[in-house]
Amino acid sequence: MKSFDSSRALGAALFAVAMLGTTAALADIKDYEFQLVDQTVQAGRDKVVTVRLVNKKTGTSVPDAVIFATRLDMAPDGMEEMATRITAVPGGEPGTYAFKANFSMAGRWQLSLGAKVQGETGTVESKLVVTAQK
Image 1: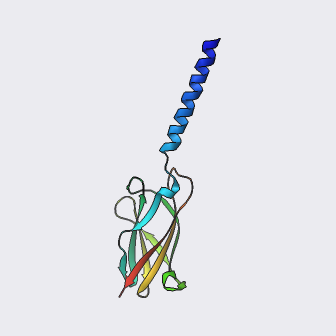
Image 2: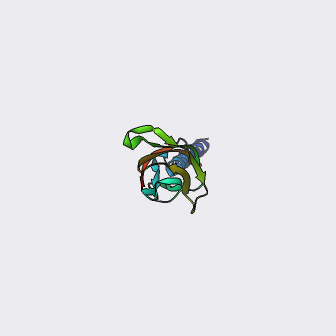
Image 3: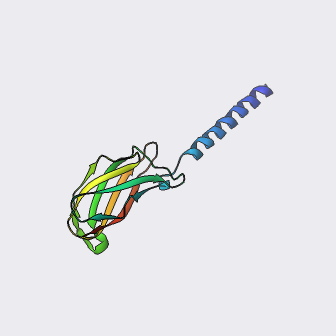
């Protein structure tokens, strides 16, 4: 009878260790961030801005994220009401995401993004500042 109890205890301990190992392997949503590929873009119509989604702990790009929120406005220059339409376009390498927009004037534009990373709980949110030059 004693051996039965110890084998059950050993099984429970192994299960607990396995579960701890599994949760420790998962990243936290705060471990991800968007980064601008280029800090500047030319002012004008149909200009493309590219971002990379990165796991900060590993430094690797994260492909296949679902980007569900995008906004581009001039909030850094005090003109948040000056927003423009932004459209996703096919990106280049895995983990990069490209957007086409009308940068109607030179200045600092804030690109706000919200995304879901596959296999993670929560949302990656970023506000990046890109400068449109004449």
